[in-house]
Image (cartoon, rainbow, N blue to C red; front, side, top):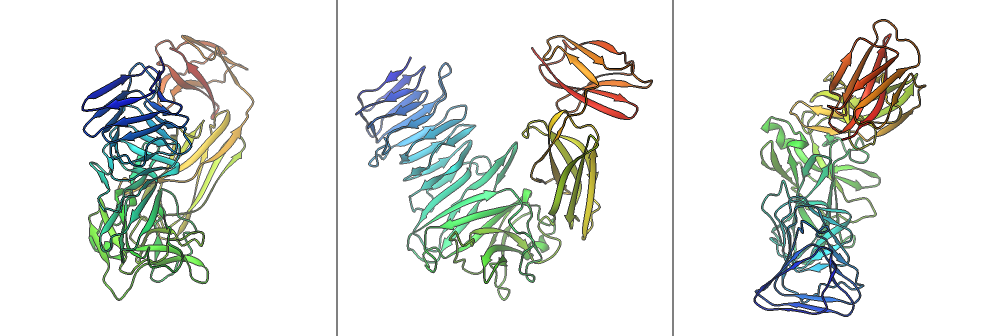
Length: 511
């Protein structure tokens, strides 16, 4: 049932709307909630036409167990949430919630365990509370226009932050403005905040985004004093102040975390500095550091801050002066791994993976991972690190690629347990079929038919999607009927091993 609100006055009560479809304010509709009132919506809300919502109370967008997702959809041209509102909106559904349209909230609280995904830019004019889940922006951003330093608050920063782009309005000098940003990559969560401490009280807007990737042009650096920069991460930090203006000049702090993989020796931390990709007669990574002044370091190996001991005065694209990362003045600090080059090639029905690494003293091993969809990966082999300070080349052969597209990446595992991924490459294999499987998908019985009589010593295995062997036999006949009814539903792989060759075929087990 679709509920349409034509007019709503709420005064001193809790009003619950149980929606099996989205609650809709359509046409020329004005909604008004008074101070001290609470509107609870079990389901989403949608604004269309020229509808308008003056919220001076509290609105809760909660889960409707029998209804659709609990989203906020604003399809009006100017934004339905009135700029005079002084109320709060709580997003507290159990699943992922989305916000689309030109929303300008006053107070916004994110409580849901999964979080919020943006379909457009939004503004929070007073306070943003991050109490659960991730605020995933995609190509959009969250803008907090309240200049107070405490306008963004989180009860657990490592589990609830801006997964994407955050913009903050600033107009207070000599106080830290925290940017609680980071990235979620698959099951990995990287909280990577930065801080700005302005030198004057003139207004400026900073935008920040964190990237878990090898920085641009990593080997082009001013050396000395930079020995190397981190190969794991970087930040893009911009401002709205024009070039030459002092309004965005600030002392900048970057965070490190366990995933940054700094040296375990606290004495080495004093070598950590901020590297800035700057254009001084040509682009290169340069230090935001005065060697005649002491370094500014705080924290421990799990979490800490490095603060520039000079004022940073350039955050303005498109000149390029907006990329920052961690750097060190000595060799044995910050993960000293730089993927020089890696390739994946199809050779004689095998995948050949080659890569070269510069200085992998802190690396324990490399895991080559494969996927059929580029999303869900599993390891197909591991190579131990040579742990050398010079460049070294490695190679791995996947002798049993799957039919069709194979996606590969390399996981670089550090001695401390941290890791980083390369980018993804793909290869296609269309080997002649030696084995026929039917029916596919199957419910209880899988027929395996060989094209020729099996050679002595041949074997057959079935593995699950994670590579675990769930069935195997050394007795191979040309036609075999296998009972797979006990298998749980999902993807499985038949591996036919004969005369040292391995052929792999995929099938799906149904409920």
